[in-house]
Length: 326
Ligand code: NAI
Ligand code: MG
Image (cartoon, rainbow, N blue to C red):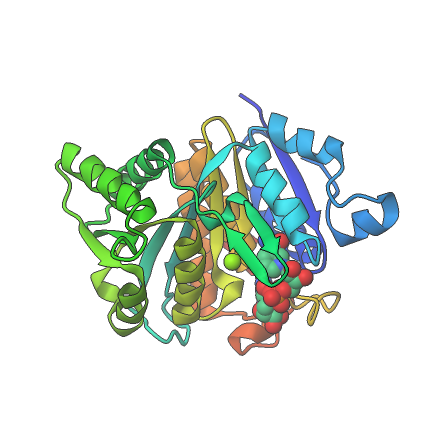
């Protein structure tokens, strides 16, 4: 069966790492048809809107979407795209790789971040000059969905440690609900899990990340803790992510458009290629996904490396080395 993949490179290094991921996918025995869409700062300048309706529709209708990065328009592009694919879960693995200088070489974490509500529900107001509010939305349904996804993910991917992150001692009503629901999902499944206050968890993740595996988080906590974990494993050039919905999904590196290095051909393609591996898993090509991950790991171990990892190889040479190993 042919799968339709929407490809939206976006801005800056998005335009350099997306072709690298396509080269990798094209080297595999998979039946994909790619449809291409525009979005981002350049699209805004040329067409007056950062996310044209036709690009949004491509993502809505495709079986999966590969997104590079947007620049200043990121919020106007990625938030509507995530909702176009009906994404409820943001999956962010942060693993240390052999051969690289990680702050914590034993890190193997996966953040399962609620992707629709919390303080990112977008309900803010200025009550009067100098007084602003933000409404934090936590629902039983969304909490149950993210907890079920997280426990299922842990089981399917062999993680023994599941931690529910929360701040229910302060946000008693909202995180109280999140915690109650997530705990009851764990109990119903007979799963082993811990709960952790998110501030203390941030410290423990830095001191002893090896004690953690899957971390189920409300929206903002997942955003922050996963970036913290990026720092533990060697930087943004390595971190992939998935925005999973019921019918389709969007895959993107955690990094942005990196204007400081854009146009030089030296962006690390690993995060984007690992995002493509998550896309393969999602569409059922788990063996192909594993092959891609192994090829990326081998190249991270043996080189060539882009400048962010201390090497001097261009994006193209790293991509070629990964494709050769496939
Ligand atoms: P960034 O992720 O673009 O860059 C942060 C630092 O990491 C830079 O020094 C950059 O050179 C480096 N870096 C990132 N990815 C790299 C890669 N693959 N290889 C080598 N080095 C890499 O974040 P920053 O600088 O905060 O934001 C730049 C622009 O990107 C902003 O306009 C922001 O709005 C946008 N952005 C977009 C996102 C998205 O589309 N999902 C996410 C984050 C930022
Ligand atoms: Mg972030």
